[in-house]
Length: 222
Image (cartoon, rainbow, N blue to C red; front, side, top):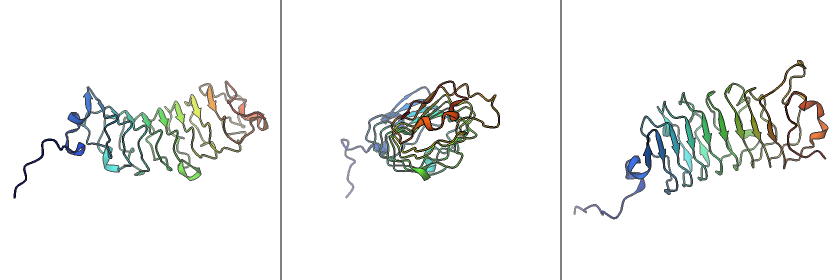
């Protein structure tokens, strides 16, 4: 009763990753392949792109022992859950793009991060760990546009250049959100780009909150 394998039927999940995807140097491109999970990656992968797929979950094992991975881009999948330590075992991870998914909880991330883009998700009040970004001393770009965040996730590292929180539910800001009220010489030189437009917050109510910034945040002043 042996059935010969059907040569026309090949599941994506059964194929070696570099046949299914495109592997160039340390970069693995798996865009738009109807994947429903993260494929096994070569150990020397530095950049992994799996945009426009159907991945629903990120498991702790998906990126285990990936010591060279620097960038992961999972834009426009159907990710609903991420094991909390799924990204913590990567000593060189710098950039994570998980925009346009269905994530309600931002996972724990290593202190090496320079870019985090979790825009267009369902991240709410309890979806960000307390002091999640405090020790990320190389963080430059934090993008959380189009979520349901109702506070600015302080403390933010001095390295931060760009904070995008458009179209969330932020209603208030404190005078020490960005500045140090105990040290009037403190200047946050790097943070030139703060977007708060589309939030129910009136920026003119807290004029002292911007004294250390090179530019006033963009948002409603009425």
